[in-house]
Amino acid sequence: MHLLSFDKVIDYEKEGYTESCIQYDIILDNKSTHSPFKAIKALKPGGTYLSIGGDSWRITQYAPLKKWIFRRYNNRVAALGLRPNKGLGELTGLVESGKLIPAVDKRYSLEEVPQAIRRFEEA
Image (cartoon, rainbow, N blue to C red; front, side, top):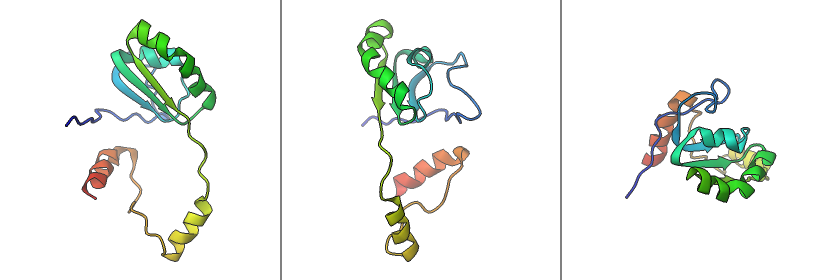
């Protein structure tokens, strides 16, 4: 079994991963606000960039460039466009009435992400 873990979580409001000279094996981008070329420069050769959600215009830029980026940089690119959530009001009502008990028992700060993941793994 091969497990993935992370060495660093970046708060995009405080730090930009494309502005430093650091290169990463994997970038999981939840905001997708950077151009494909800036994101690729932040990857090590053979690295992977995953865009999930965020700016739909940026996400659509990755699709036609995927093959070229792989041939030119040996990097993999994947983008996933997400639709807005529907039915959240109904879920809120179920939680407030006690008919639905959420598995998330508290909010975690960005610094507590490793603890939250361990908590999820134990559940």
